[in-house]
Structure formats: structure tokens, C-alpha cells
Length: 168
Image (cartoon, rainbow, N blue to C red; front, side, top):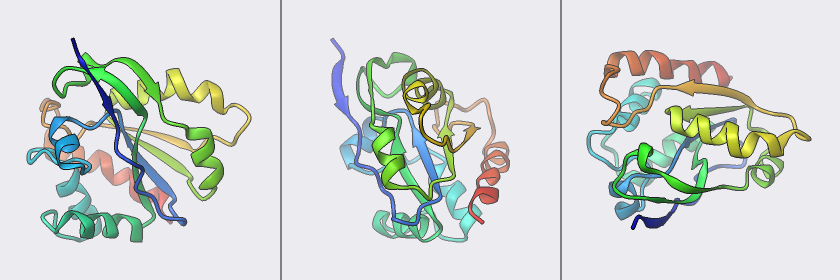
């Protein structure tokens, strides 16, 4: 039987303008209680290249770098059942409370989905409940996961550069 997993808390500043959303942290991230903790995940190297900081800074300093640029981190799912770390094994999904978050964070202008599963779950389970609120721009970006190896890091970096246009 698959374990019931709970996502990490949102990392967000009062002036955040962009929220990067994964589906559910993988086993390495949950064990470390850090977003994108798997050593082969391209998220931190990509953020470091885009924003000019070292990807190997201590985790709290990496979070500070993102918050200083108006970027928050969270997951679409609050909890789910999953064996291992693959999105394809996610079952019994429960979404996070985006209606409350977006009311509390009115400066968020864009949501950047880190992979197809995050975007799919958001559109299916969250978007219908937000119809009475202004919807931020939705950016579908390639997963930074090492499991998504069909897209090169160079191509991922080029796609993720789109977030820069939503931070002005």
C-alpha cells in the first residue's frame, strides 16, 4: 500500500509575484524537508543561473535568494498517496488551499508549474474553485526532475527563463 504523504509548507514572502508549484515533493525532498533536494534535480542550478546565485548555497540562503526576487515555492497537492517519487504513481490527491493563499497574497501575478503533473492537478482540482477570483497567469514549464531526462538542462533553462518576464 502506498504511503500518505504531506507536502512542505509554502515558502513565500508578502511581496511575492511568482509562485513556483510542484506536484508533491519527492522522497529526498520530504526526508530533507527542503524543496528540490534531490541532488540531480535541475531546479536550483536553473534558479542559480537565472538569478546569479550559487546553486550550492545553504538551503536557507537559496530560499532567501528566491524570496528577494519575488518568487515563492509551494505544491499543488497538500497530500496524496504515492510509492516512491514518481508523479505517475500519485493517487488520492488533496489540493492545497489556493483560494486562501491567493487572497492573502494579492501580488501573485503568475503560477509556474514545475512539470505536467502539477499543471494537470491544478487545472483539474483547483482552477474550478477559483472562478470568483482573478486568476494569475499560468506557466507550463518542463519538470526539473531527473526523471524528466528527455529534455536537456539547456532546454529546461531556456524554458524556465520565461519566469523572468513575470517578475518586473
